[in-house]
Amino acid sequence: MGTTVIRGGLVITAADETNADILIEGGRVTALAAHDSDVARAWAESADRVLDASGRYVIPGGVDAHTHMEMPFGGTFAVDTFETGTRAAAWGGTTTIVDFAVQTVGESLRAGLDAWHAKADGNCAVDYAFHMILSDVNEDTLKEMDGLVDEGVTSFKLFMAYPGVFYSDDGKILRAMQRAAGNGGLVMMHAENGIAIDVLVEQALAAGRTDPRYHGEVRHALLEAEATHRAIQLARVAGAPLYVVHVSATEAVAELAQARDLGLPVFGETCPQYLFLSTDNLAEPDFEGAKYVCSTPLRPKEHQAHLWRALRTNDLQVVSTDHCPFCFKGQKEMGLGDFSKIPNGLPGVENRMDLLHQAVVDGRISRRRWIEIACATPARMFGLYPRKGTIAPGADADIVIYDPDATQVMSAETHHMNVDYSAYEGRTVTGRVQTVLSRGEVVIDDRSYTGRAGHGRFVARETCRYLG
Image (cartoon, rainbow, N blue to C red; front, top):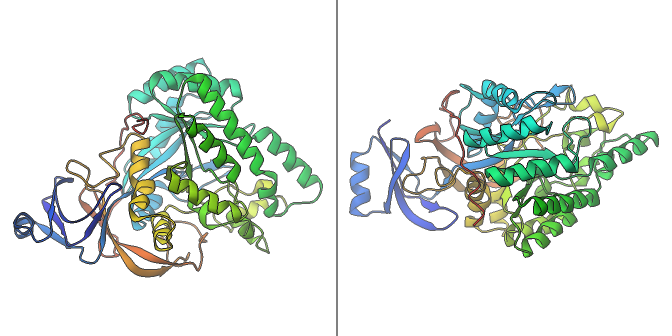
């Protein structure tokens, strides 16, 4: 692979901002040195490749800890494959995804994990890892959890929602949490009271309330908060850490903040859609609101300020995408006349880093906090750090040269996700990925894709490193 030097940029990590040049050898960061130092000049003279980052940020590749490539849902599949989804991730400055392998009820965890390995192996443009969705908690699958942790699948997702599909009752959740407390795994929770939500769905449809906006109304914020509270108490009983996915509502944030004030190992993520979109989108006419159907649902705009504040105070630690794209034509349209049949999910793996940089421009978060919530903390939370999520000697050379001054208009016409609409259509943002390296290999070269399917490797993860 030879040696590469990135020179002239402002290197930003969660900890520091430094005017430094970077030496890359064998796919890893070897050293950093001050601009124009004798050491840096010597590197540049002998390097096989020199990348000029003058006037640019040099940041760690993003770590998106919540994606669903080829995810089955409601009789269809998410339209991004591991090939198209990881290529889009690279275009957006994300160099590692953690996707969800799905256990089918009645089958083993191993069968589900093997199926997802088969989907991803040889197809990914950037590195990937897996969480395991537990759909069927029993004595056999509880034992299997230990073996998965040993082979680097160290987190397990359970659902308080979707009765009859992924739903686990409190007893099953408690058993899984107890097992995780023993083997070091991290339980991730979809926290919504699915039993109560199903009642509200039935009542809404019976009353003729069928449009997409009712998806948000029946999935009440209080039912997210109630489930979040219950998950926290079950984790306390089990003596296990807890990570609550896609937190969308003020009331759920309050539950997490209260638990953290008690010193409990309770963590939460939110997603760009909850920070930038709202129920106004769900209410768009002519069934356009179906594009924005996801669960947890979009909330009224006033919730956004609470989410941003929680990101600043570290009551929320991570921004992931929950990337799960379904085309408007032919997929979202399955719910015409019945919002409950609209496939749940939004595209976003390509947009996350840019949207969060816009939050830096707008003064909502600092540059280092941008890197913390998008790169470093997800890597630490899910056992990838310091290999991923930072720029330091020994780390994988997953590096983005980022132009903080370029402007772009987000659009389905120009994005690289395999979906026929953009959730952020027409939105102008400041900042754009220029060049991306994955393990030292240039996969985006000055806005041209030079990567390949099969470059991305499966990464076995350690257990959570965020408990300190």
